[in-house]
Length: 201
Image (cartoon, rainbow, N blue to C red; front, side):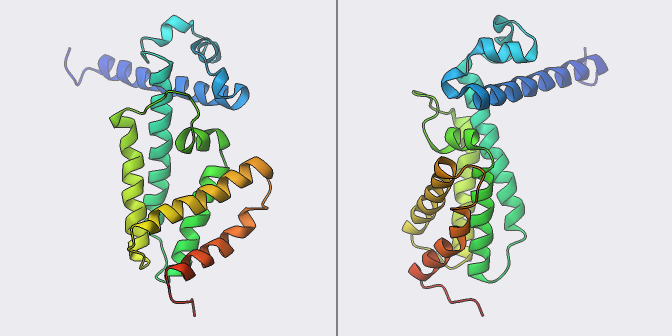
C-alpha cells in the first residue's frame, strides 16, 4: 500500500475526523458538566463510542485535555496572526484593536479561557507540542507591543494582567453582558499613558 493509495488517504482522513469529533465532544462536556465532569465515559457517550474505544485515538483523558489546550492556543494565534496584518499605524488604535480582539476571544468561551489561562484540570501540564502555540502567541504579542512602541519587558506582563483581569471580571460577574467590555478602551488608554505613547490625533 503506497502513500498515494486512496484507501489509506480515506482512512487517515476518517481518523482525523474522528479525533476532531472527540475533541468537540470533550469541549461540549466541559461546557455542560464543568472540567471536573470531563470523563472519558461522558465524552465517549457523546460520540457514540464505548470509553475503551477512545484509547485508539487518545491515550488518556490527559491526552484529550492536552489536545484541547493546543487547539485553543492555536486558534488564538491564528486570529492574532490575521490581526497583525491589519493593525492601524496609530499605536493606541492598534492596542485597542488587539485588546478588544483578545477580550472577545476569551469571554466568548469561558470554558476555553479557563483551560488556557487558569487551572482547569489539577495536575495538568501541557506537552511541548501543545504548549508551542502559546509560546508563538506570546512572541507575537511582544512583536505587536514593540510595533506600538512598548519595548519594556514589564509591558507584556502588565498587558496580560490587564486583559486577563478584565476577562475574568466579565466572565465571573457579568456573563453575556458588557460591564467590563465597556472598560477596555479606558484600560488601554491608561496602559498607553503608562508607557508614554503619543495620543491619537
